[in-house]
Image (cartoon, rainbow, N blue to C red; front, side, top):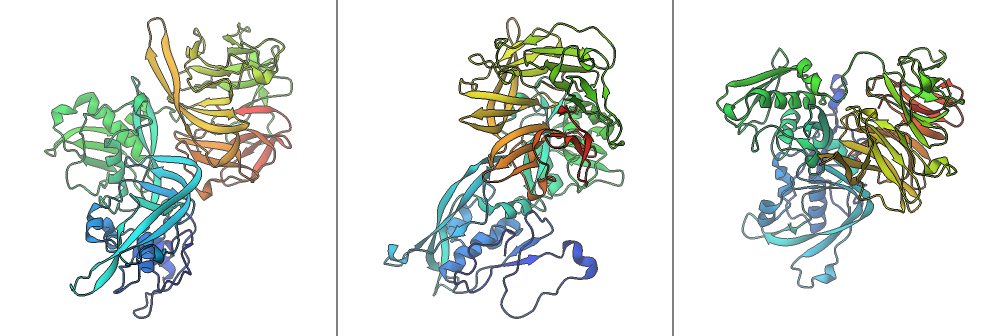
Length: 624
């Protein structure tokens, strides 16, 4: 039985068509032997996302009835069978040739529910239609991009006919009409596929941007490639359609792996040699170096391989360039300094306070930062810290003004770099949002002034502010908060429309204009469509977010989400009551920080529970 349990079980089926192998990590203690006689019995699947469970398809038995053919095929789609050869045995010869499982994946909340065929619909017994249904939550396209949606009804049909058997005398039931691609329940999808980040250069920049995609956990049934080779191939295919307008792929178009390569392994020096089907004069010098950097950072996300150096080879097998991990670090949006990140918050007097970084003693008192933001002369409502940790931006407690100051040296209070368009008497929630810095040093804020809502960017935090183009920002839309990725290419937005606050990811595009740079945030994509409301979000790495929200009919929860909207059952974090704000560091080894109405400022170390740090305070942040 597949990983999420089959709704189709118990409908008069004479046998199961799959065998599960879950020996994985149990080899040391032994695994039950396979019986050499008797029927294949139904067995219980693994927990959702358990990648150690292997599914092996079983071919249709002789004279199988049409119910068995449909059920067997639906389950064979969840297997690791090379080329999906066994799954194709359930199809007619024509359908087996035309079916393209690599074309797309339809992800349902649970395994597809197969209904019984209407036998009266075809009185001459020429064929039968079997409705399959479920709740569709996402699709994965041919470029491996995960595209979530709010759960919607999914309804398709599988058509079964009789065709001559191999002996030329009898007839066997086979499928001749089916939905495109693969149709999988979420648990089967997560068991077979894993998310990896490809990396491309932000347009005109030396900064890499994460582009999450899904590859097979093990060998890909269609290409026969191992996960490392799949990942390299996906990178060479170029960015996903959504990210493409904001990034560059410096290698020549048509660059691909040398034909026949299905496995890439490192040598004893942890060097990965990548043979490419391209002449060396087309990608030498800086182009080769940048492609090697993309590969090194991309492969760093794979737990199954350690790559310290990449060597790119041309079509003749000659070495074009080599690049080590240390050399690739200069292109990462957030460079690891080896120092713990310091979290900050605003105390009850409107002062900007610093907490002890990392896992240091939680009882250590918070200290006011140097400079005007830590003195409380202009009480603050929210703050944001630049990536370098030397400057901060603060929004006044009344939400009207945005200030920038050093937080490492003393200085006088400078004039605001931006003021809200709202009247002085307006509610602070109709004025400026909490600000956010990107890795380029630009400062972003939303002005919620009624009738004149806008996003604003202050170049370098000191330049002339620019109003951002936002074609989606209408009168009935309100930006509650925003967080910009370190690479400055993506923005996480909490947007309220029709009484519902949702999480959206927008793409940031920059163009040089006649007088000033033209900046736009466009093509918003839902990142948490299954959540009824979202109240806080923070970047937690290159393509991961930590989110506070509620699913329909559920309680408040804190969980990790990918920017493409994908998630897993293991992403839910320990519960905490009445959370208003959550902040995440860039490194997973450091604690989350949150503001709780009941417990003040609290932190969550990896593998631990929430711990109180400061009895009262608001708006905790890490740099960014």
